[in-house]
Length: 187
Image (cartoon, rainbow, N blue to C red):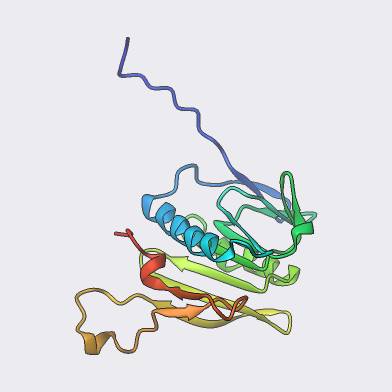
């Protein structure tokens, strides 16, 4: 048996962005995967027994005739939007983990489409900076509410004071998001 050869069938994900088919990077970094997993656990535990449902990476959301995306994570509170092959209509919360190949799209075109379709809350997660930008829908626009950043370990306690490291998801009064949980096991 030749051990130098390996066959690897890759699962290819794609999105339709403004009418153009765009292939997504086939294998995200471990840090990217850890962040999505951490957010999935936070929401998965919180949403047990509730109407809203969370979807980690791989579920498609169909928004317009020219756009369907595969966000890193989303929460949908209207069960009628959930079909066998994806979500049809705006999720209530969308999370995108930024990467060099997707950051411009996530901050630009995709944010604009999410806004136009009525996504109520949008997070952009920057793994390198260990930060979360929280955008909230107000008067039809996704406006930046705050940027939350986990301070580096080498800072003194006094230097860490200005950092905001926890926040509430606007969908729920009783769900506190702690950055230490979001970035657990992220190197």
